[in-house]
Image 1: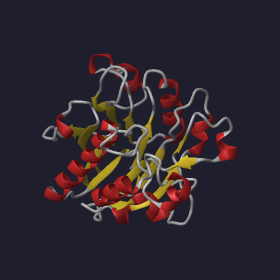
Image 2 (image 1 turned 90 degrees about the horizontal axis):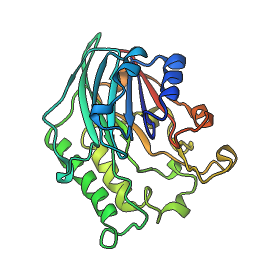
Image 3 (image 1 turned 180 degrees about the vertical axis):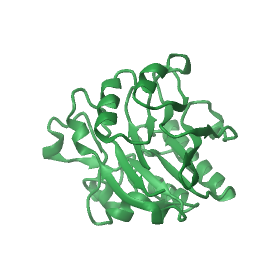
Image 4 (image 1 turned 180 degrees about the horizontal axis):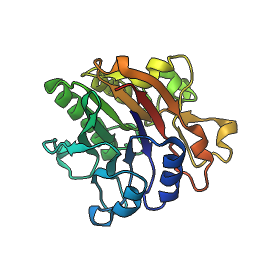
Length: 264
């Protein structure tokens, strides 16, 4: 099973990108973040024409939005928490049928957190920290099995997940309050699939700012997109690929897709 996670930064705007990714990679499951499309306007027919007959999504106008597109049958997981008491379309989950049984797929879009890394001065940062604390506590209370957690988690937790650990320690996405909480969330039942194949100290990025005129030359990236597996699935992991070339496509997202291959 090939599974892709991708912050597409507007599904309707980048449908040609989704079609190209599908033609080139033919993943079985695609998890999208920042779809930015309300449920009634979700492009069902265009997505199904790409081969994804099984869909589960939550979206809103102009912001956020998450979707799971699957060639394999899936069953939506409905009894999920309302994180921080907000209906802001940041999490969906589904049980995807594979040859060896169902795998639960969680797809998250974590709040970005604004610019000021102080929860007293910045409500957005306080919301981000609270969101991560709630998710970690929930997974500790509901230990996951045969599960994959993916998404734009908006935090680069390790020293070589950013272009400069020293310079970004006070920049939202790499501050200690964020990285400590994210690692605690992962330790609530998951392992870092990307770093399993590409361990530290290798630099590993999935996001490059639009502000960089030549993103490849400057390479000021961050690893904001993640794939986590429960320990029972880790032996099935055969490959991790960061599809950097997608960042060069016309009018790209500032995130690139990450693909995991599991022998299931």
